[in-house]
Image (cartoon, rainbow, N blue to C red; front, side, top):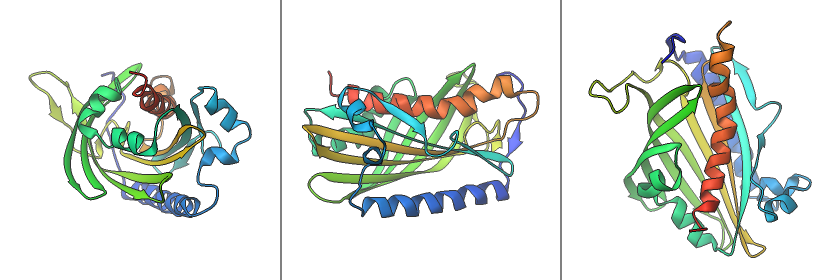
Length: 247
């Protein structure tokens, strides 16, 4: 990897992220209980685009990047419509974490369900982030699903461990200590909503992540992977979810 410098996740950076997530989760909980369950229902023209096969992805607010002390928070939301399927079928596919490595290529290189207790899952994934630079991370996530009724369900996934991998696949492969690495991805939370209607299922995801800030003079190298990949990854995730039902 090019020399972009090692950085350490600072307590104030993590605290700012946790505060942001707390506010976002309160908003999402309120939305889940409201009559407007889907984000797309509040976006002009979104439903027509989804029904015509488009994948939507846009910043939750502003440009999608929020500067904090020592880092950047990335908040993107998107949606896709899958025709001719049921809610149960889509949720079952998304919960098949052992097959995520097959369903979500190339972003997910490997995946494994570590444990399940009812609607609570512990999941391992090896993530690939490639945009000028190539970054591989071992990640673990706690995921909880909530069924609202026969037509609606939502989930919350929080990363519990993210470790950057040096020399992935090599004999000298090793993990860098979490939070003491190149800082391309320190946290990754995702919030999914599923609603069955209009002859199919609407799938939405809001992804909130934390990365390092961009050092002066290295923006040309770091910006593509820090600022562009959150959108691209969300697009790919939603597209892969839809395309899993075309086979």
